[in-house]
Structures are given as C-alpha cells and as structure tokens.
Image (tube, rainbow over all chains, first blue to last red; front, side, top):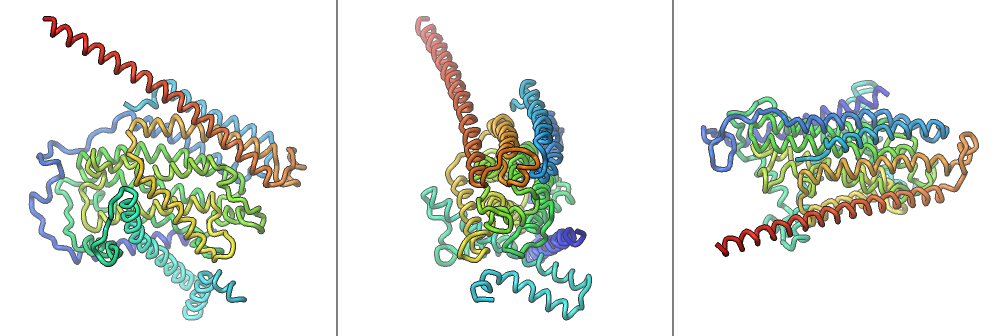
Length: 118
Length: 423
C-alpha cells in the first residue's frame, strides 16, 4: 500500500525534474532584454487602467457551492459503488434516496433561479 | 514462451529485466526500488512529451483538412518537422514577466499545470502488468489529479494581473468545476458494474476470462460513456468548450501574458490532459488494452487514436458555445440526466443480477451477463431519448418566443417608420 503511493511521489519528482529542466534550458538559451514597454500588461492597444485583482462575482461562488455539494456526495457514493455487487436491495433503496436528495437540492437551486447565468 | 507471447509482453519483460539489473547492481532494498521507479516515471513523462509533440502535429494537420486547409507543410516533408521547429522556437523565444504580475504565482502556474497533467499517467495501465502503480482508488485519483489544472489556470489568470487573463480564469473555475460533476456521476456506473476503482480491475472486468465477461462497458452503459466523453472534453477546455481561451473574445484567456517555454508548458498540459481523457475513456468504457490477436499496447494505441480523432473532429467542426449555454447544458441537462441514469442502473442491476450466487443471497432475478447488459443498454438509450425529447421541446418553445419577439419588434419599427413618414 505504501509503495503504491510512493510511485505517485516519485512521478511528481520526475515530472518536476523534467519540466524544470525544460524551463531552465529555455532560461539559458533565450535572450533576455527586458524594456519598460515589454513588461507592460497586455491590452489591446491602450494603457491598462488599474490592476485586475477584483472581487469575484457572487454567482461563481454559488456555482462552487453546488459543486461542493455534488462532489462530497460523489465521494460518499464511490465506496458504495465498490460494494454494490454484494449489497442487498434494501441498501440500494437507501442510496437511491440519498441520490434523490442530491437531485432535489439541484432542482431547488434551479427553481430559485440560481442556475440562470446572466 | 513462444515468440507470440514475447511480443505481447515485451514491455513487461523489458521492465522486469531492467528492474533485475538495477537490483543486482544496487542490491535489493529501498534505493534500488527508488531508482527503478524514478526511471519508469521519467520514461512515462518523456513519452508524454513526445506524444504531445506528435499530437500537436496530428491535430493541426487533421483539423486543417477538416476545415479545407492544408495545415503545416513547410518544415520537412508534409511538415512533419513542425513540432521540432516549434520546440526550438519555444526554447529560444524571449520570455517576459509583466512588471505588474505576481511573480511567484505567475511563474509557478505553468509548472503546476504540466506536473498535474503528467501525474495522471501514474495509474494508467499500458499493457498487462505494465502500469506505474495499480492504486486501488485509481479512478478517484485520476479525477482528483485532473481537477488540479483548475488551480493552475486560476493561478495563471490571477498572477498575470491582466483583465483578459482573469476573465479566462473566472470562466475556467465555473466551467471545469461544473463539468466535474457529470464526469464523477458517470464513472459511478462503471465502478458499480466492475466492483472496483482500480483501473486494472476495470479492464479485467471487460476482458474475457479472469472474472470478466468480455463486454466493454460502452455497450452496457452507452449514455454514461457519452456524457463522460462530453464532460471530459469540457474538463480539458477544448473546443467547443474552449471558453477559457476564446481567442476571439478574451484573446487567449488565462495564458495571454505567457510566452516561450512557459506557454509551451500550458500547451503541453492541455494536450496531455486531452490524451489522458481519451485513455480514460478507452480504459473505462472500451476495455483498455484488451483485444484479440494484436499485442495489448497496439490495441490501446488504436483505441486511444480513435477516441482522440473524435476529439479533433469535434474541434474542427463545432462552433464555440456561449457561456450561459455552457452552464445550462451542464446543470440543467447533463447532471439531472446522469442522476436519473445512475439511479436506473442501480435498480436494474439489482433486479436483474448477472451472478447467480449473489442473486440467491440478495434476491433478484438471475440472468446471463449478456441479457443484463442488453437491459441496461436499453434503459440507457430510453433515458437519452427522453432527455433529448424534453430538450428539443424546450428548444422549440424558445425558438417560438424568440420569433414572436422579433415579429413584435419588426411591427413596432414599421409602425414607428409609418408615423415618421406621415408627419
């Protein structure tokens, strides 16, 4: 079990190594002549006004909340799915109720007009 | 061993021989294990980089043909050296960090996206016995690592301190996060039917022998396969769901400020992710490396090439969707349909049980696996048809109200014009 995940760590090391070498190689090869105009923020022909660090729209936040709901629900569903073949029908009905609760919350959000993007 | 078996298992034999060699030099222990793993990981990463170069060429050529263009044809015969020319350019191009940018976040983002994209390949089985690591939560791991690119894209968009970048990053969060839900929900039937989250076990279940019945899951749960493919395309941010880059609206979205190698790493991330989605589709729904006569790795290659060609075909054909259409399509169509589909599969799979022993223990009608597959297939198709019917009715209504609106406006304009003329 431990060695199973060890490979993931090694893979991460290898990926960082390889991509790091690519970045470093490019850093050695490329010319470096920065000027003030080059380092300006890109804009279509105009000067940039203010910086871009603004607040998120609240709608993104609401979508993220619905996502968290389903993601956590999904995390609960996967262990059930692994055990599915050995479960009695009774357990399946319970899980169906759980999934229907998720569907219900989605329908509630829908009725509330949260899913309308404008 | 016959020649046939050697050819079929050449990857495994080579890997075992290499591991044996390293162990004989360093002695059995942690160090030898580490070296073997590191070399394997480096080989996988390097193969991904090579595949990335090949895919950019293939995609440019094929999409060009679809759109009645020629595509790259200058570097080498038929332009096959184009990826190498691109690579040289990426290495030697001057790279700027905007003065206003958040330097750390900005410079780290391409590395993060590339590393997360490559990490997916740690669990993908390339041939029997040739897999980085056979995690027992393989499917989970792939989905978890796949959502890492969301973080990287948000880092890039926020770190650039550019309005276009930030718009792209905002869209990314809404899109990638949203389309992960149908992806998750449609992997569920596969895990249910195979009773395991390990990718190797899932392939075994679709292979003849070893407890499998030889029916690929695409023939059992076609609707799940379809929705998985759609949400997979959206997850990788490819056309028609490429709102996060949208060249014609927000110039390139989150990577507008990047150039040189950092830009290349974003591209690598995108293609490696798209390839990972194709491989996951073949593993989950088409039986991965399983297939008759030809060696397993050839089968995997053929299947992945077929799926990736579909991705390229869609990219060459479909126009980009609008952001409100994108969100509605996901939350009002894919997600509810997936949930209904999952519930139906759950119930049908328990009523018609393929395994006679479980049928006796837990109740249910014992049927041959093929019959169960056919029943599930039918239920999937029915759900899809009902969903399409509902959507087409909605669409017709929408078109009618839009037409009415236009007529009313035209009449209003006409009346106004008549008034002006009369005066």
